Image 1 (cartoon, rainbow, N blue to C red):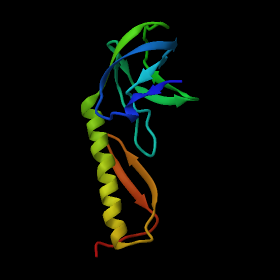
Image 2 (image 1 turned 30 degrees about the vertical axis):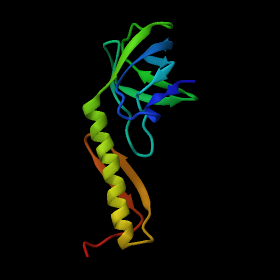
Image 3 (image 1 turned 90 degrees about the horizontal axis):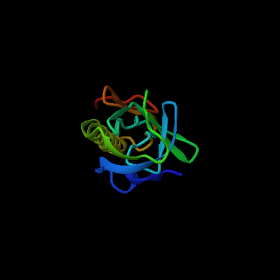
Image 4 (image 1 turned 120 degrees about the vertical axis):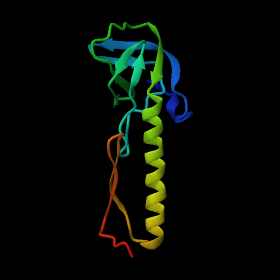
Length: 134
């Protein structure tokens, strides 16, 4: 089971970890600061030992880092780096979504979120009914 250090410190973006498993492009670390995405927010990207992490997702109780063409092996100690500018953009989008929805809900108490999507390219919230600018 991967220790999820991103849950304790969202501002941590450099860390050391041990490779627990490396099968093809899938790398599992003993601990990670990479957020695997969820709740409408996309995952972190970055680097593991100078190799590009393109995707991060849950696989059972572990977190799998997709590292195309890596040469990592079980037992390697690796220095990892989350793409901070990207993560900070996602964090701001996440906070902005909460502020927007809270403000809208004050005006319309029966409002509910149907879908949220937060990525570097696009950020949106879909609610359960139409709203007017009034």
